[in-house]
Length: 309
Image 1 (cartoon, rainbow, N blue to C red):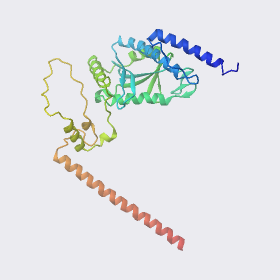
Image 2 (spheres, one colour; image 1 turned 180 degrees about the horizontal axis):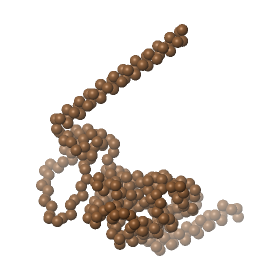
Image 3 (cartoon, rainbow, N blue to C red; image 1 turned 90 degrees about the vertical axis):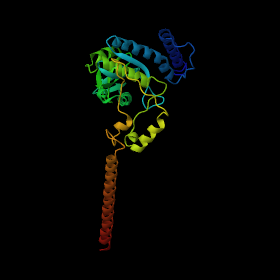
Image 4 (cartoon, rainbow, N blue to C red; image 1 turned 135 degrees about the vertical axis):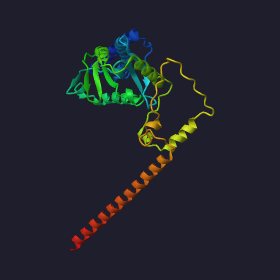
């Protein structure tokens, strides 16, 4: 029998059958499974997804006993289909945790996470980007406390900062790493931020994310949107009960916009200053274009004179 035609599929099917049975017993994966493509590894990854979730949750359960609140399977802000695997909120801040399980050698060399010798900075950067999206939802006082962690499933690795903006740590060391983070949140902050993120990211739809277009959006657009979204007869809010936990607040989009930060959008002085700056900017632009045109014409004439001479 030729190698690669019969022996390799048999070995692959045997290995998959063993993984499937082990994962089903450990995490309740249904017994019915789709047809596996003999030439790809996608089915192996599908089989180990449930095992990865079980391993990460078991590691994070230890951190929960030390005062951390762990949220699972959340929406990624600004995305309709991407999700966030784990968000841990505790004394050490807000930590986004994504589990990566790779076969073969995984090392950290010269600050770069490598799998089989190849740099995986793009994977690390994707985790850091998701942490940045969550950072944008928080109030300024809590934004510096957001961290990104790449948990390496089934690997023993001490925490190491790697290129891409995250910390790589082995799954067995994950809980110890979280507990060892320097405290930045009080117990009240932990409760407040965790409840807020659970409400924002655990709902039926992903929350919107502020973009550059929103930052430079004119005040009239914000006002029109607010008028359209306002209810016909808004109810008078009830006074908060004494001693109740304050609601988590953050600046509205129009308040953090760079052109309207902390200023009254309807004030006449504000409108005048914006108009004046716009007129001055247009005048400077026109003068600059005129000078550039004159210099171009002069260079063309000098070149023509040199050729004619």
